[in-house]
Each structure stands twice: as C-alpha cells, then as structure tokens.
Length: 495
Image 1: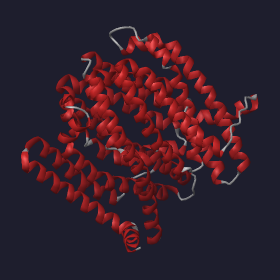
Image 2: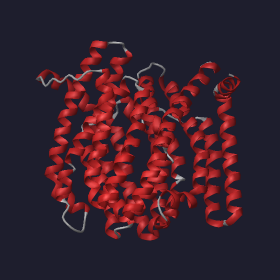
Image 3: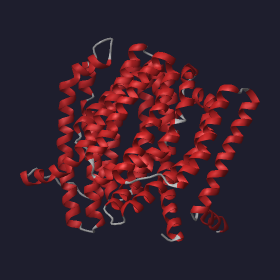
Image 4: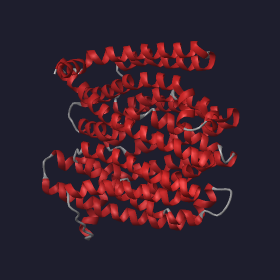
C-alpha cells in the first residue's frame, strides 16, 4: 500500500473517531449535569434503583430484539453500497416489519416475566407493576434500534449525530422536573419518556428519508429469516452480557442498597465516559471491516484494517485516560456528590481496563464482520462468565475497589483470549506499531495509577500534569506522522 493511501486511511479513521467521539463528549457533558442533579435529588439509593430497572429492561430487550440492530446494518449496507435503490427500499420495509414484531414480542415477554424480574432483582417490596409499566419501553427500544440501523446502513452519520445530541438535551429537561417534584416515584414514567423521546427523534429522521411502509406477507417474513438468523448469535451474546450485568448488580444490591448505586456511578464514569473514543466503532469501523472481509485481499488487508483502528484508538484515548485518572478526586464529587467518594478506588484502577479495551474492541468485531456467529458467541460467553466470577470474587475480598481490580483483570484476560483465538482462526496478528504504542502508553497509565496511591498534595497534581503532557505529546507526534491532521489545522488557521 502506498504511503499516501496509508495516510488517507489514518485520516479517515481519525475523522470519524473524532466526529462521534465529539458527539459523545457533548452527550457526556450534558449527561454529567443530569446525573449530578439526579444524584443530588435521589442519592445512591435512587441511582441504584434506576440502574436495576435499566439492567432488567436491557436484559428483556436484548433477549427479544433478534439482533436486528446489528444484522439489519449489514442488510442495508449491502444494498446501499451496490446502489440498488429498489432493493434498499425493500430491505427497509423488511426491517421495519420485523422491528414491529420484535417490539410486540418484547413488550409481551416483559409483562409475562414481571413477577420473576421482581423476584430476581429486589429483596424488598413488590415491583411487579413497575416492570409491567416499563414493558412499553422494551417495545420503543426495538423500534428505535430498527430505524437507527437504517440510518447507519445508509451512512446518515450527520443525522445520527444530531439525533444523539437532541436526545440528551431533551432528556435533561424531562428528567430534572419530574425527579424534583416526585422523587423516586418518577423513575418509571421518566424511563418511559426517555425511551419515547429517543424513538420519536430517530423515527422522525428515518421516516423523512424513507417514508413508512409495512408489509406482513408470508413471503416477506420468510425473507427476513435469513437476516434474523445472522442476529441470533448477537442476541444470545446480548442476553449473556445483560445477564452478567444483571447478576452483578443484583448481587451488589443484596450486599447493600447503596452499593449498587456507587458501583453504577463508578462504572458509568470510567467504562462509558472514558470510552467515548470508541463510539465510532459500530457506525464507521464495523461496516468498513465487513467490506474488507469480503475482499480478496486476504489476511494482510484484514490485519491492516484492524491494526490501524487499534493504533488510532489507543493514541487518542491514552492521554485522556491519564488526565481522567488524575482528575478523579475532583471530578467524582463534582459530577455526583461527596457521598460517592467510596467508589474512587474502584474507578482509578478500572481506568486501566480502558487501555485493554482500546486494543481488544476492534479485534472483537472480526467474527461479526465475517459472519462467524459461533466464534463471536464463544468469545462473548467466556468473557461474561469470567467477568461475573471476577467481580463477585473481587468484591468479597476487597469491596468496591475489588470490583475495579476484577474489571481490569477481566479485560486483560479478554485481550489474551481474543488475540490468541483470532490468530489461529483468521490469521490476525497485532502489528509492530500497535505493540510499540502499547509499550509506551500503558506504562504511563500504570505510573499514573501508582501516583494516585503514593502521592498527595502539590506533588500529585504536578506529577499527573507531567504524565498527561508526556502521553499527549507522544500521541500527537505519532498521529502527525501518519495523517494530514497538522497540515489541515494549519490551513484552517491561515484562512
């Protein structure tokens, strides 16, 4: 591959990672304000209750959506890339019909399972009615997933970005008044309204581009079986993942009503907030990787695509992780309240798991892109069992900090498992550049963690600032050599 083409590939990855990372950053900033106010209004107990309801709803949704959110993207992308408008519109009609079926199925399952969901989730009161009232949320999530898949498959990236920002802004104005007036009693209606807002925004953009058409003919439903078949492994993996999360939160909830709220706050801030760089994976990287897997270029082209994504993700996220870990003693009470400080130790060590996530996440998409449902399900299933075992064991021995140790250890295990399996299955291997960047950046993260344990006062902040600057300079210098980023910035400044 020519040097200029390599630079263009890096620039493409950097562009879309920056686009969706920026959108995710806006969402996080607004979400921070919302969580800060909600934490103040409801406290750890209320935050834990929201977390438990969300986990249960996600479990039901992942169990009944037939994997359309993933398999539909592949279906739409193929027709869109071939320029076949008739096939594209037929595929959209097919996806919408199946999305409606899964929405109805999810709602009915949630109602039927509500007594068991209450029994498995709570040790106090009767929350069966709450789960029945939340059943429409499962349906709205299914409809939203189908329409979002249509927008992703047709490369409507700007619309997806606008939807995401509008959704989080509107949710802010809905959540705060309801929780202020009714407190915990507003949790169930608020979750419904949030799902409704997201669905209406997504449907509004999608229907404007492709007007609504439904068909429930036997032939059309039979056509969808192939697409649904591709998503079965994704469904099962989603059930396992949601089930693992459900087990962890239910276990922590039984240990103490405030423990699950603290854990959720720590998990959200580290895994979700610090992981905003990874938000472009499903929207941009997965379709590109799927195209490469169908290409005759073989293992070399596949390795090159995966490794470039890892390189950019690792270089972008590393300085953020160092700065984030350093600033946590200020960020945690500022974004939540001082009552959440017991989770600080968990968060600081969990940040280290994000280094592994930057490397392993692009690798984990390989089975999906190749349509190898068995390998994908095997890898996901093993990881889910391991993370549950590690977290439960970690909490038993070291409390909340132990859950952070467990999440980091599970990420290391997952990386070793994935890289080994993909090497033998597809001939994938980490590039020399990925290894070099990891050898440089990960020790900086480890040094920062050691700093949080051993240093205080002015020395702590000076050390954290220096480590952040070192990581930033290294990443910028490497990205400068691989992309046209610097030239483009200079041109804009001159203009």
